[in-house]
Length: 283
Image (cartoon, rainbow, N blue to C red; front, side, top):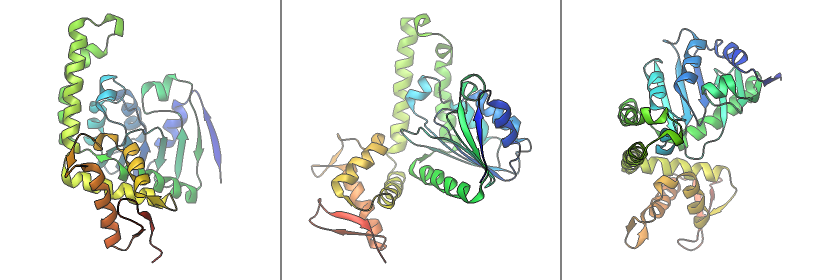
């Protein structure tokens, strides 16, 4: 196995690896902006026949702070032949995988600062077996997140355009009207996300994937353990104010996800209802 240390200046080494992309690139970056995407696209070269999967953290807060830009994600959608964009709360990993030939694990986000100006560090790996493991780990994270399609991103971008003029100013330069605009648009964007998260089919699918992911990474978990871990991963979906028959709706949905896997023989549970111990089935 070959491991190459990557330190600042980071851009040239990053570009050298990206230009070797033949079929697909998979990457995880909490923050993504227009400049970072421009570096990515310019480095890859002939993009029309390539696919991309992205894991990021697209939230109202990050949009208001201008650290993850919907326009940058839309540019990717408009360029690659196949695009999957997933958003996961609390994402912190920065990983770039080129085919199954190279993987960069680094501190650098896909931003102008991350690639060009910050003091970053990372490692470049070219061991195919290790890269396959890294790739699957990132795809597991992708499956836990919310998949955002192009129309949804276009809607979010339309709303974010209303605050771009304010984002270009420092906090001290912003007047009362502009601060009010940020708050109002932040709430509006957040409401759009919440409405998206309320989609029943999406919620069930995400809870199902999350429950299995957690059980694959723990030998045993109680129902109460699962409640805590699921809420930690998806706080935006676990609204304690929404109840059904005097119980938190999201907790019912977590149990429904468990029952889904139990019916398929994938997990087994033992003990009293609401206090069961769950594990992957040995069959």
